Image: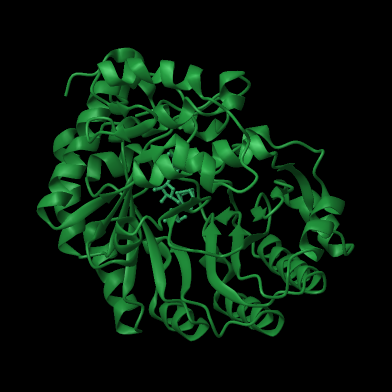
Length: 448
Ligand SMILES: C[S@@+](CC[C@H](N)C(=O)[O-])C[C@H]1O[C@@H](n2cnc3c(N)ncnc32)[C@H](O)[C@@H]1O
Ligand code: SF4
């Protein structure tokens, strides 16, 4: 595939929200969160996200909000604060019905079986879990054993997302994460034995010393284990922001063109095994819920990536956790100290967020539909988004002409279709509608 270098090297957000997190501000704080929570109607359906910001060691590439911890004490204290925050939120809202629960991190299982069960019990005391259709957890296969698998099943977990990255020994060495194929195979077997049959893999391209051949072999090995879904992320190298990424020798990173070739190789190899592309970087077997949601135009994108969740509000618990309410986004303090002090004192730990304007909603809707459906009709969207701002988008349509010249989009009046050639670059197409980015105030990783 021939693409002008300017496209492959541009830096843009991943659009898990709009406006994106770097544009949240302290104008939205704990008081705003309290008032937004209290105005949720009793019938609202909830999605919950619990963040655990600890790992036993840091992988060199990691861009997640986490920290290495060896001692047990900080983990115990953090578990107590999560319990405090759950009680606090429970006392502030009317709706109870949860449809989706996701444990992310970091490594949530570092809490240990007892604390995981205790927090789940607390959640079930505060919320109504009878309508939960997805209870998911991110797991590191290096830290899964039978007692943990059994506890997860007892908690009601029905989906596990395993960090895999790449199966090649020289890549695993270069990223500081040794995790042989047999270990992942055994983890899946343990999960399936206890009835957790829905499994996702997280894989990456663009890693140090990784070649296209490594990606192909990793895709073949991953497919042989038959996870229902895979996410294949492009490595986001942001050493100015994540200092430990300096452990990676930049000279060993693939070039933008190699990254593009790797992304395509992953896609082609997975296609042979029956996986269909979902949005930017996900793949699913065609009988999976995510694939069905995409076929029906019901796919959504949120902070956990692509989802089938149709909840009215997303409530985030833990440090750095982001919530979405009808009025806008909120984010908790990222440092454990500020977070803990706030919730221990009975206050929300919200430190920033954004109240959505009607223009934000319209642009956010366009960006989400582009990232999910690869297609939008500006006129239909303007009519369908309640309270949508009146914007002509002339400048945006002009900017898309260069994408059309490259064969990455097809323009038909005000209908925009991202082509298969343009799929890896959909973040760039979405960025055309990002008014905050056009004003240039944040630094991101490259588009491919
Ligand atoms: C919270 S981690 C997964 C759970 C668990 N901690 C583990 O590593 O197995 C989420 C996933 O994000 C992806 N990821 C982490 N850092 C990244 C980066 N810098 N660029 C792109 N993807 C990244 C990895 O695939 C990782 O498995
Ligand atoms: S990839 Fe997972 S295990 Fe590795 S440092 Fe990041 S959150 Fe922790």
